[in-house]
Image (tube, rainbow, N blue to C red; front, top):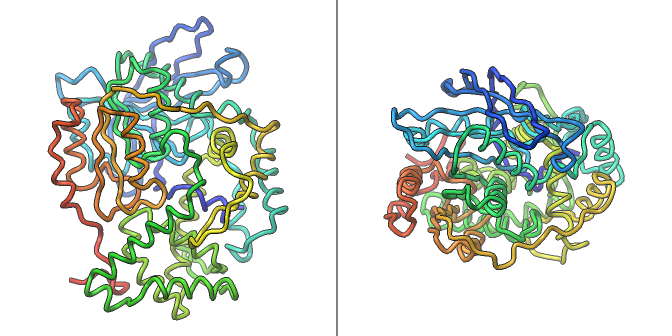
Length: 494
C-alpha cells in the first residue's frame, strides 16, 4: 500500500512537538472564547529548542451541526521578539496534504528567524494531522518480506479498505474549507484582527481558501509552491515530473565536470527504465534508520518514484546523476537507500486519513477515468486513485465549486522553483493573474518549497513590512544557485 501512496505525496521532514496544552472548549453559542496559552518548548532532533506558548481549541468535527464528536486543535504561538510587535501574526500552513504545522516548520525556523522579530508565528495542526485528532493508518509496507513489490489492484484496495475501517471519523468533514473555518476560530480566539498567511505547497491551497472565505481578515499572502485553483493534485504528475528531470539532466550537461562524469544522462536513464520494465532487480540494502538489511524490489515504479521524490529537493537532486549512473551499472544501493528513507519519512510524517479525505473530496472528482498515453518516466494510476476513493467515501464526492475568474487585491508574494516537479512556475504565473497585486519569484534550478533559501527570507520580511510587491528589489533571486552535483559518493567537485 505505502509504495503506491508515495507517488503523489510530498517529501517532508519529521519532527516532534513537546508541549503543555491547556484547552479552550467549543462554544455552542457560536461566540469564540479566548484560547488560554501556557509556556512550552518545541523540540526536534537536530534542531535547537524553540520557546513558545501552546494550547488547544476544541471544535466540533461537524461545524454545521454544532454537536457530536469534538476535535482538539493543537496550537503553538512563537511570540515576537520585539517589545513593540506588529499586531498581525504569520500563520504558517503546511503541505501534504497531511503535514502538521507544528512538526513541518520547526526545522526551518532558524533559517527564517527574522520573520519572528516583529510578528508572532502561529502554527496550527490542521484537523486530522499532528496532535489535532491524527488520522494515521496502520503501517504495512515495512512488514513485507520484500519492500516495493507492486501488489495487484484488488489487494491494494483491500488495504485501503482496512485502513479506512481502522479510523473513526467522517472523511467528508476533513476538507480544506472546513479546516480554514477552524483556522478562523483560532484567529478569533487568539485576538488577532488580521493575519498574514504563509502557505507551502498544499498550504497554498489552504491559504487561498482562507482568503476566499475571510478576505477581510487576510492582510497578505506568501505562497510557496503554488497549488492553483481548479487544479487537481495528480492530474499533471507525468509531464511536471519529466520537465523537472529534464532540467536537472540539462543542467548537468551544461556543467563540464558533471557532463564528463555522466555523459548522455537522458539516454542512460531511458535505457535503465526500459530494462526495469523487462526485469526488476531485487537488492538488499541497509535500512537508513535501523541499519538492518532490507530487501527492496527496484522496478520502474520504485525507481521512478524515488527519482521524482529526490527531485523535490536540490540537495537530493544533486545525487540523481550519480545514482542513475550507478544503477545503470547494476548498483542500486543509492536509489534503494533513498527509496527506503523517503518512504519512511512519508509514512511517519503524514496524516494519511486526512490526505485521502482531501484528495477524494477535492481532487478525485476532477480527474479523468484514465490517463492518455504519454512519454513521461512516471505516471499516476488513476484506477487506483478512483478505486481508493470509492473505498474511502460512502458516496462519490460532488465536483468542488470552481474558483473561476474571481480576483483579490490582497498583497501576495508568490515563490516557485524553476525545476519544481509538482508545482512548476507555470502555476505561479496562473495564480498571479487572479492576484493582480502580487510578485512572482522564480528560484533558478531549485525544486519544491524555497521560502527559506538564499535572499528569499529577506524579501519575505520586506514584503510583510510594506505589503507592496511592486516595490521589492528581487534581483538577488537570480543569484541563487542549486546544490552542485555529486561527482562521487564523497560529494561535489571542489
